Length: 180
Image 1 (cartoon, rainbow, N blue to C red):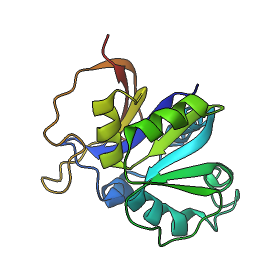
Image 2 (tube, helix red, strand yellow):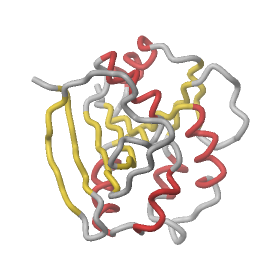
Image 3 (spheres, helix red, strand yellow):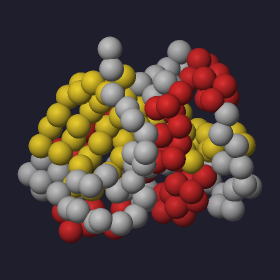
Image 4 (cartoon, rainbow, N blue to C red):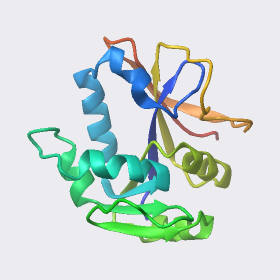
């Protein structure tokens, strides 16, 4: 049985839907090491349809020379949650249909390794509500947007801090798991 680990880039006020807010801060190499550790044990990727449609054209033609994460994203099986048919094509993609916690639990139970989620905020919220997410890695950027979609809309959650790290670009990595 695998564990499900998600990472999100968020603002100080909790917005996540448009990652362009990350650009002015660059990408600290230590962040890449952290993300590499999160993806290292993953045998599967789980994405919401919107994130998949954004990732497919951005990743499918990248090479290891372009980005060291390219082999992981291009070679790993991607399971996509969404009620609508997929528009973009990307190798190793398995559509799961509309969100069904039983399907996700079955995927988790049958996975040879861990399952990695990037973005897919609505999916992450649902998995947190269902108790299916094992860890949530927030990369908090020192910016306040004041508008957009919040990662934690009206949900009340209690989580336990597992680790934290500050990067030279001002971003904080906060890793949370289920509260005891």
